[in-house]
Image 1: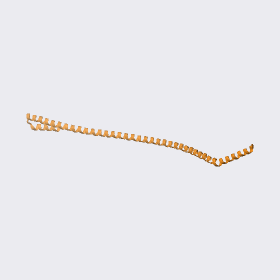
Image 2: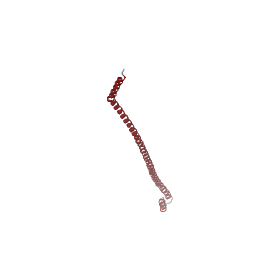
Image 3: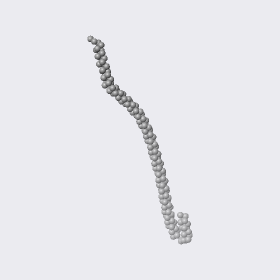
Length: 156
């Protein structure tokens, strides 16, 4: 048994296996490993970018919500002001309408009082004429009675 020849034969076969592995198996294996490393690095970079974009988006959303709340508050304030203006205008219109109706009622009362006075004067004049005719029937002094009737009419 020759240990040297077997050992030498195994070394040659092992060297051929190493050379074959280094030439044909190792490069594709290393290329696959490097490609996988690149993909993992790109995935991690993309995850970092996505996380930073998410933070930016959250900040923009918070800013938009703040702006929307400010705008909503301004709209509510404007609506309240318009409502107050409408209520004030309605009050002023009601006051003006009340004043107009009051003036109209006062004018109507004045006209009714004037008509009542005219009717009263007419009745008093009629009574005066009636009284005068009775006086005339008793006493026939026309000048005295006429002066008395004229005085009554002017006083009325």
